[in-house]
Image 1 (cartoon, rainbow, N blue to C red):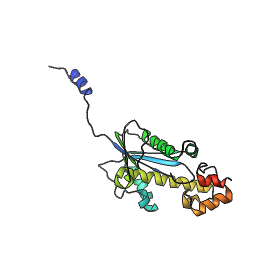
Image 2: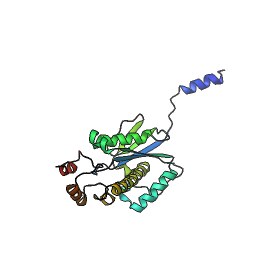
Image 3: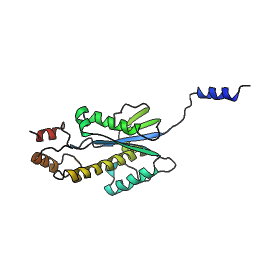
Image 4: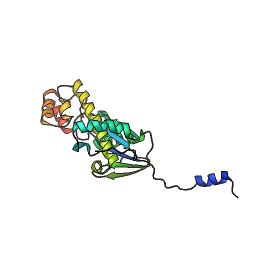
Length: 205
């Protein structure tokens, strides 16, 4: 009869196919002319579902704020990460977005076995990952990540507005609106602007 020790050693060599944890990942801030790009990763608690999760762009600001607090309180774990304006200018916006997503996943308190990412591109990760187009409207964990990233970045824009009130970041969140472009032409770019983006480059001439 085999000993308990030998049975345990045998079990350690088996390829157990466990479900593991799944994280959803999304970003906010690829299109704006200023500020960092933000990514969030969320592992939801299947036994404690959150009602009302959806693509953050389909929710009102008030609803996003409420869900932001609820996700942080009820998710198994979450992480929010950035890639700076300097990194965006050095790497380009796509690579900086992938970097922010990688940072968000790698700083989760619990390591996921599977990562589902909104869109059609994937960051370089050590675990299995899948890209899902329109995942922020289809996968609750990605919806949750979308909300965390959006609210966090909107709050950063409020801070940017307080530091650079001439540009109206509290209203357009850094996007190239007529108001923002006019402010760029009048005042030139601030330190928080992405200097490699065409409208910002044109305002420096």
